[in-house]
Amino acid sequence: MAVDTVPPLIGAQINYLLSHAPFSVKVEQMWSGCKNPNLLDRFTLVIPYCLDYIKWDVIYNALYPLLAPDIIFGADDESFQPYSGKSGKNRLADWNSRDPTRLLSLIMELRDSYVAYQRKRIGEVDDDRLKFEVDTMLTREVIFQFGKKYSTAPPPRLKLISSLELKALFSIEDFKLPSWLDGMCTAEYLPTVEELLNSHIKDAVSSIETRRKFILALAPHFGRPVEADSVFCRKSTFLASCGVFTFLVYFSFSLQFPKQKPALVLQSCQHFNSYGVPVKSSTLADFPWSPRWQPSEMAERVFDFLADESLNFKKYCNQLNQH
Image (cartoon, rainbow, N blue to C red; front, side):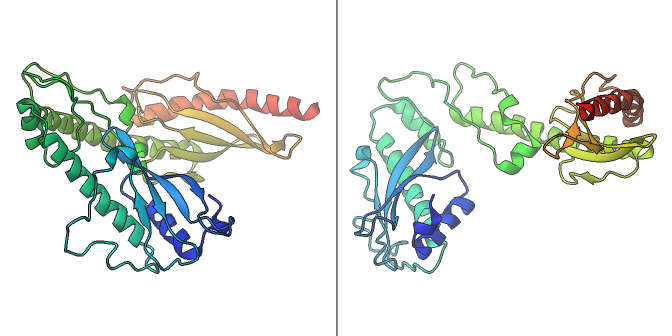
């Protein structure tokens, strides 16, 4: 997005929307609708909805940036008229272009209305089973298949999405959904999913403490870390030496630690390549490891391994600088 060609009042609202929306909103394209083609005042928003996306065009007027924008919905949603026939206030009625939060509030209000609109459309379908599923899932967004009736509910299509903070704690891709049982309804199934997710997240939180204990166990061998991830304990760096040869040891921990051993990379403090970048080793993983060991034994085994590996790394650095 070319920020320098977006009017400041419009740009502030776009930036606030993208950084504060509770779901991942994207600006797909921007274009100009005024005589000055360098002023971008129109754009398409890609908004997640259920397992898909909806695209709405947001139309500002760069020459009159104090005016509220127009919203153009998708071609399949011509009957979606959220403010038609409503006498109460809405986000457009009291628009304040100088408030950067207004576009986000508008999109949130419209998306909520869109959910209600789609739910109403489902209610008009002549399918008792589908109506039952929807009535028991009032607080969730779930996709149901149209086109034929079901005597028993089909498995719902679920897509689990995690925030950036949760991704640092827990790998949602590794989570396996429980089996769908015959005769089950969605209202019975989702609590089971939520219970399993809560259990996995609790395990992930406890694994932070396991990583923290291992990092602390390294200190008697390497000293205090030069830097470390104090929140999720996914990374730490120690300064080490072999005689006069000094180097950094980078530890990286996966979310499967200690089942999966840490990745180690060495970086010389005295050797540089032709670009002036410190020489690094490849990722080291060929060292003794068992997730059943105590953190103190894990740390001791890693230290013993690096005592030998540092000699090989020093030799590699010296040879590299000779060429």
